Image (cartoon, rainbow, N blue to C red):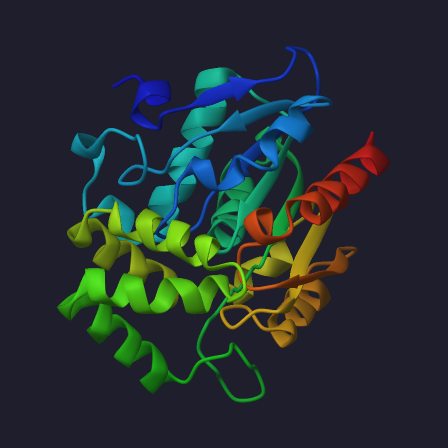
Length: 267
């Protein structure tokens, strides 16, 4: 199968420039980066893609076996890099993609030069002194609601995840993105996302890493951003003056500025 077609890969910017790969989170697709990608393309070569099962990807390539683990999504990332023969990539991962990036970089370290984690969470469930933001019961209820009525869950949860109630169009956009995802695929991706535990993987990160958190985020609270920052040696933590879990939509200028400044320092 043609990987570039499978993952609906789009490349912009001038060839030969440093490469930035932008990866979306659960229930979304590459369109989530539309307010950030053009500005980055002025300075970098930008690679956008959809994970199999999302957006304009080839749905025939999806299987519950492969995508029942974050490793399956990490394989997507590595295979896109191989198809484009990319090296020293700056990988920008939103939400669960931040942990997918950790696994991809461990699998093919020669492909990745730096990581930017936007709203990362290595584990969503509280565990002893660790605060992920949710109890095990919270996650069980979330998954049960999603599996019993995905469209209803999407309409209820998307505005909460996005926050910014004074800008309801943002919540509506996320709702539409969730609802465009096949419910069967969404159920598997949700379990893969919310039941994953990548805390032990963080110590393997050996490339310059920026952790971007929002001042208020119900999905990845600031305790989580602090944990990720502390767990990755030499990482940098920036708290955006933004609310919600999708700063690339709610605060695109600040998000773009933070990414660009970090990558410029590495050049």
